[in-house]
Amino acid sequence: MDSFIIEISEDDVKREREKSRELRKSRWWKNRIALGLCHWCGERFLPEELTMDHIVPVTRGGKASRNNVVPSCRECNSRKKYLLPMEWDEFLAKAQKREEEAS
Image (cartoon, rainbow, N blue to C red; front, side):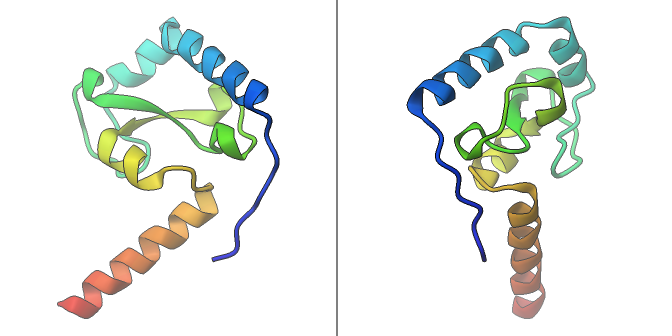
């Protein structure tokens, strides 16, 4: 898997994480998690079980903005980690292929 590498300063990461904390307090975010839907797996969860996931991770140059954050279940957020959407799709495709081969 090819990786997209970008240099991000610690100060930039801290700034974006602070913006994320503020965004979590917003009515917009509360409305998003109230739907109870994980962006990645499509499963339903209680709002308090959903986390904020950056589509493009902050450590990879992503911003804490409405168009870059989605509700995610803890499992998907943990598995996705710092992957970009195309890398996440690749990861899921390989995992599915391994499951099919094992059955």
